[in-house]
Image (cartoon, rainbow, N blue to C red; front, side, top):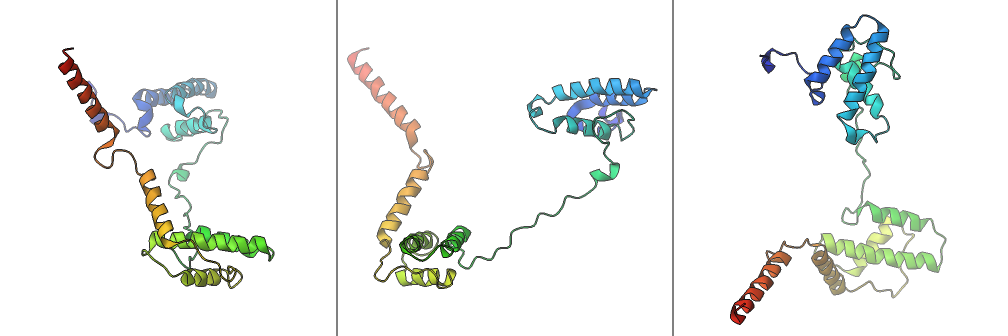
Length: 223
């Protein structure tokens, strides 16, 4: 009887010990033709063990790479793909740089800054003025979402002027949406987005209550 403690280490355990034994046997074959023929059959079996990955574009390439890795890079066969080098497994991936864009007012977010940038590129006119008013209302909504429950409209206008470097400013006399309307709209949106059942009641309890009422009605009718 074999125990795991006495068996050789599995390089890629997902394929199992039988695949590992097949690869070890293929590696021990004398001629290159025999090894290549055996490896092609093993690749088919490895693919059957992972049918959910067959739609991946480089799936077959991965199987061949795993084959060489499991043979400890000792397999000498005719491969449709270049043989990986042992050192490539220890190579660290390139560091993923985190975007370091500075956001002047974080409660407005990067999206509003990008919208303002596009608006600055527009020609002066009614369309640009209308967009400035839309942006100002959007900024007020964002401000009230992430800050306190009220804000002076002049603060929004000042921030818009700073972010646009003085190029965007609503027309004189323009008034932003009322704070109460924005807060009510935000609360309504939160209620709609709230998953069912979080309030402790939910549809399941209502259905049980309806079923209980129907059962009591049947008992009173003698049915």
